[in-house]
Length: 158
Image (spheres, rainbow, N blue to C red):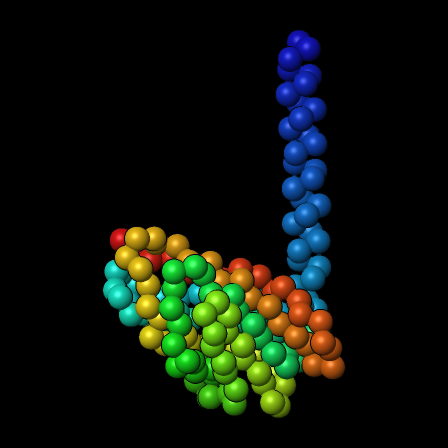
């Protein structure tokens, strides 16, 4: 009986703490840009691939002036990056790549209610790991603060 009471109490505490965190996440989705999806082409094992990261700009968010992407350890990204909207229209961007970080500067700022697709072309992958995590940060227009907008998780089919 005592054991059953303890298990029930722990279950209730766990359920209430998870739902509170989930609700907080949804509230911020209306005002902050977030990662919508990721993709790899070709999907199977290959030495050079294209990683695509899609970012959603909600209607209530400010525009983005800069995006920074931390490159996972072992991955090599060339400075061959294209950025476009969902329809395929190119977006003007100044890109720079160092060993562990990609910086995309938007001279005109990004508009709200837009989905942008960032294509990292000619990404060189080691053949040993099927999951790559890119941490993505954004600076909003009229702000110097770098905000984390999520982790882009790219999976490789083995």
